[in-house]
Each structure stands twice: as structure tokens, then as C-alpha cells.
Length: 339
Image 1 (cartoon, rainbow, N blue to C red):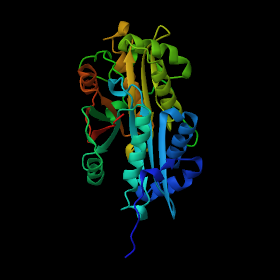
Image 2 (image 1 turned 90 degrees about the vertical axis):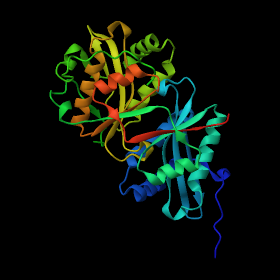
Image 3 (image 1 turned 60 degrees about the vertical axis):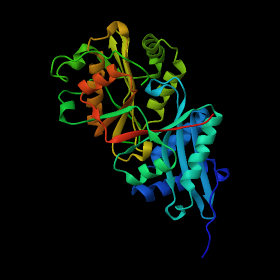
Image 4 (image 1 turned 45 degrees about the vertical axis):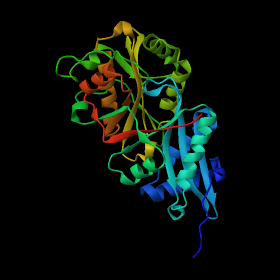
């Protein structure tokens, strides 16, 4: 009987531009559909900003055996310490049983540690038993964060969309605490009338960073710039927005709609960051932005929006629950890295 040699972490190499076709082919075999646009954006992002991406591949005699994609987190979940978000991992079906996935994960963790990253983060559905078993075998534990989501249904399409939604041609939380207050029991009724909500642009960065500093008491300009780039350039659909009063930006919501993160194939948007100028707190600004976001997502036929809340951010959690969010069927996981 032939003995199959194990693949070691030393065999892992950085993912390269020429890997795109085999990566797409492996993913299509695993998922039953092609997600070429997603991988094109991720590979392009890694080439453009290598400090923010960790992407590895392993080869065997048949070519590409597997790949793993991770992205550096700089301020998500209200954390100051850096982390890496494990976005997706794939192993060619005939290469399974050779610990390809484990070696890819080891390579990702080793590089993350060299960069001073202290933990890996990811998420999986509670009933994805194969993935849960794999995460358990490789040292992941349940993370303390709350994953919440909201179905985009008829309650989100009661009024016309106020601003344009930008879709790329060819393709269909910090620690913020004040997000505005609900208007009675009818959340959707007049929320968008409290301010002018429009699509975000790169020119909005200085005002967004100003609001973030007022909320967090920290200068996170680099983080905000990277999240803006990710929301506007690395996502298949642009759904980030700002809220204005008398022409001045008083709030922002950074969201992205993509197929691929954590192996996700359903039409889901991710709300990364939302913030309101403290001088305009409790005036419905946060609800206005979410109301518009739900309308935009409904128009794009995106079925769900998801976000992650830090365990002690009870104000944000209460705000999201009031806006129709509920505990997700997806569980957050983390793995510590020895630095």
C-alpha cells in the first residue's frame, strides 16, 4: 500500500497571481459554484496592501493542493491588539487526508505571530459539523463576541431608496456606543427623515476619522482608512454610507457585500463599523443609516446583514436588537498565537 507523505508547514508558500485559476477551480468543486470575482478582489488586495493580508498555498505533484486567506484586523470588536481574520480555506478533494488544511493554518499562524498578531478569528455555522470538528482539532475555542444578524425582508422596503447604490460593473466595530434612538415602536416609519443619508466617498475620510476619535478617544485614522478601502474597493458591492445634517457629516456606516468570507455563499452583507457624532447622539441618526442600509440591501436582493459586537458593548448590542437584529446561527471562534 502506497504511503502518502505528509505536507509540512515549510511547504507552504505565499499565494501568487498565477494561483487564481486553480484556486477558483478548487473552490468551485467544493462549493458547487464559481466565486472568481471574490478571489480576484482578494488577490488584488493582497498585492496592493501586503501588510494587511496573509495568503498561503501548498503544492503537490498534481499542482495546487490547497490555499488559505487571512486579513489583518486592526480595530474590529473594540480591540486594540491586532488579530487575523481567517476568511476562507480550501483543499483539493483528492488531497484531503494529508493535513493540507492544518499545515496551511500553521503557516498562517506562524506569519501572524511574526507580525505581532496575538490571535486568529473566524466564524462558522453551529451545524457545520465538519468545520466545527476541524476548528476544534486545530485549537480554536468559542470567542466571547456576539454575532448578530438581521433578515432583509419586507419591513426594510417600505419607502424608496433615498440615495444611489453603487455596484461594481460586472457584479450584480470599533467601540462606538451612541447610535441614536428609535422613534416609538415603528422603527422604519420616519427614521430616514432625521438626516440626509448618502453613499460614502473617499473624501469623507477626515470627517469619519474625526467622529471615530470623538467616540473612541483614540486616533484610528489608519484603521478607518483601511476599513474604507475594504468597504469600497475590496467588496463586490458598495453599501457604505454617511449621514449629514446641514451639510456636515454626523454619522457613518461601513458595510460590504461579498460572497466568500468564512466560506459563505449566501447573499450576506457585513456591517463592519457604525458611528454617530456624540453631539448628535439620541437623535435617530444611527437608525436612519441602518434603515437606508436595509433598503439598499433589499434592492440588491441581499438577504441578510451580519455584524460582530464586543462582549462588553451592551449599548451597541441593545441598539442592534432594537433595529431588528437577533443572535446569529453562526458562532465566533478564536485561537491564540504565541508571540
